[in-house]
Image 1: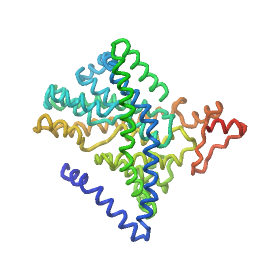
Image 2 (image 1 turned 60 degrees about the vertical axis):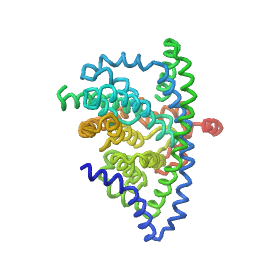
Image 3 (image 1 turned 180 degrees about the horizontal axis):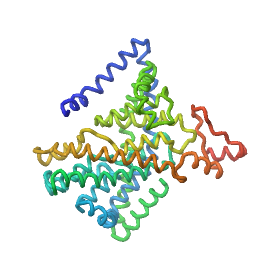
Image 4 (image 1 turned 30 degrees about the vertical axis):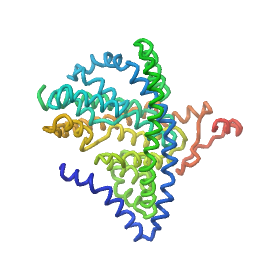
Length: 178
Length: 235
């Protein structure tokens, strides 16, 4: 399984990048001009994202520095401890939805402090690996097309994040019998 | 919704900053994260440009249509509003493939591309469609087979047993993605989140912005709003 996946992650993109133009030229598509035509959009898309990303990241940056995280942790801890989630992992779990880099630093801290083979280390690893940075994804993907009304997406994303945090604790506790 | 999330994030930060005496740090982060946001977006330009070019070749060669037909059995359940020959199908398929395989650099451009293709099926300029919300559910749920970042972090501490979390991670991420998808489907039926009901509400309030690049066959026609007002709304 992992051999196949390693092979794919190494070869898939280069092969696609070679085979797509090859197929296209056999279909008599002028590949070079077509590529440059399409590529023009890339720049404007990236620029389009800036306002959305700035709005989101500034708010998250302020939140990270303010110490409001401790409040949120004490609010959620009674709920998450019921399913066997150690309080030490909770700040990392919350940060995971807000900022990928911030969560990575917290996760590395936990691994350093408690070891990779500990309950806390394992739960933190699984929790980190099983969700995306919801707020970043929201800002980037919806920002790229100018969507400001995300409808239920934010709640669904946060719900999924919270659930994956709980699942991480449940699965690890069951597998290693904590 | 985004209005409130944004306000709550900023509001709690400022209040907590004042209460705990970290207001200086809050201000510092405000400015440094503004920089970070621009850096992140600029960092996207290169790969974004490349994949936009490659996707254009796929489109011209007719590969997008072929891919779209091949995956339509799955797509018609998750994305009922997307016609089977629309380029959004292949963009979504490539995005999902890239994210499942953990091809980090390719993910974001392909996800953006999928959103842009779906935007051509959006009657409005700024309200997410059901299909766009579903792409968002798949991305925030993020089904990944190999959590490469975590394995690297664990290896940095201790090489032995670094990959032991792969199995549990796959299980937990599958469940999370499922919850995201179900929540998106169910919440989308609520009055406050329903696409058509939001359109009706905004139409009544005169704040609806129509997508000029809509390619579907059911465009919104604004009749009640006088032209002058409609122009003001557009700006």
